Image (cartoon, rainbow, N blue to C red; front, side, top):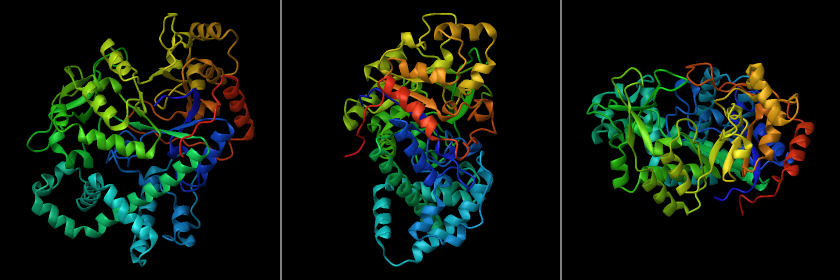
Length: 503
């Protein structure tokens, strides 16, 4: 889509405040949208919404299509009649941190109670809506529901450790477990129905207030996911279902051994033979939930770093070309020439990757924290940007802008001050102003920068296996003063025009 000159804030819903230990699709989410509207922001950018697996990472999910049950609002379930008010009385967890383990346990218990009540009710409009949902989402929902039921049945074991007949999806085994676990399967469908029901109402509220949602599609999927179990022919797996080739990136300045991510690689030739149907379904599902989508690791659509699964590091991988142009051409046939996508084109970018991005008119990403080297030709400096780009002060993988500023050495700070033309005393608002003033059509900044937070507000440290993704902002910190300050900058730099996201 042709992104109008506008701006927005990056905040994953888990980072919202609330008394139940994690952000959710409740009153706090609606209040955040109200703040965005008051601050004249046009966009709310989020991370992937999938059900998180290893390390609570949004980029490691049990499904590329499903929603995260942890985001379901319990108060909304009371309003819908699936829970009693007493069910959530007396529950209050500390703010400022996502309590993933505790929330997982207690929310799961309440969701089971809610689903039992839902099924015990006589026919209602919501029951009819549930039936429509299951029909419309059947391409992924059935496999996902039985996948989760089987995982619990086999004591949370990864699918490659299940008995061979169900591991290989033999029809007799699917029928046997489908019958045996019918109640659990139905429960997981109810949970997804509830997630989508609440999210669509939230999204419609945002759109009515002139706020669009920017989603996120990780290029790869987790091995232990319904996607791989249900579609093994689309991935480089051996006869036992084990990965043959896995994803990563080669050695660079930051890592002498590269990064071995471990995601199974796609069999692109198989995907292309059937017209990329799995990818079409994936983009279609994401664009039902959001108005614009960021594609993570865009360079992987030009070539992937293939690592033999037996290799312990990424050193001995090699680049393999993939039919990215054919995929994006197919997406244009489905969604129109003006694709509603943002290319995350950071890292080791080649002219071929840039050509693929530009061929389909996709805006790339520019990070201000990467801009202030000694070279005036640095592509992240505002004077070098093109209009068809998205400028960020930083992303979820970076330090907060204040944390970044504090970490700079004196010569580096001097270069920043020299570029700004003043002493840089108002960090991180200086970077927000700089991004707003740039020619880039879209300016995005994490909420942590709006709040002026340091290292305590960091969301993720790449390569750190645990302890990430838990930051939440404190209730009451988004006040009228912050909204007015942002609104003034947004108006000053011509980013406050009204945009329509829904008819």
